[in-house]
Length: 102
Image (cartoon, rainbow, N blue to C red; front, side, top):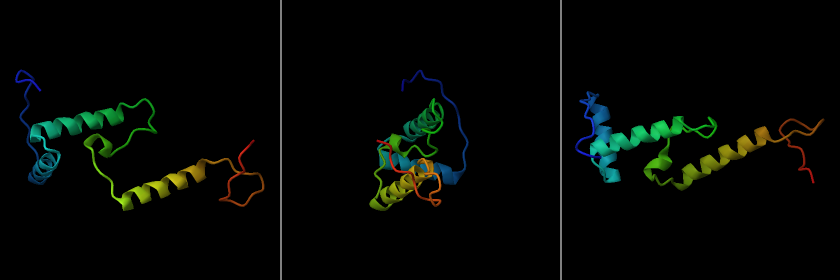
C-alpha cells in the first residue's frame, strides 16, 4: 500500500481487534495489511461467477494449513455430495448410484 492510499478510521469491538492482532502476528503482516487481505479475500469469494465455487471461509487465501482431521472431514463431505448428485438407477434402492455409462 502507498502512503497516499485513502485512510479510514475504524471502530471495532475489542475481541475482534484482538483476533485481528493475533491473525496478523501469525501471518507476519501488520494489522492493516491483515484487514485489507481479509476484506479482499471476502470480495474475491463473493465475486466468483459461479456461486457454487464461492466459499464463506476462504482459508486458502491465507495459506492456512489444514490438519488431517479437517482434510478427512472435507473428503467425507465431498463424497456425500458426489453420491447425492450421482444419477440414480431406475428401480434401485435409494442411496445407490447407477453404474457408469460406457
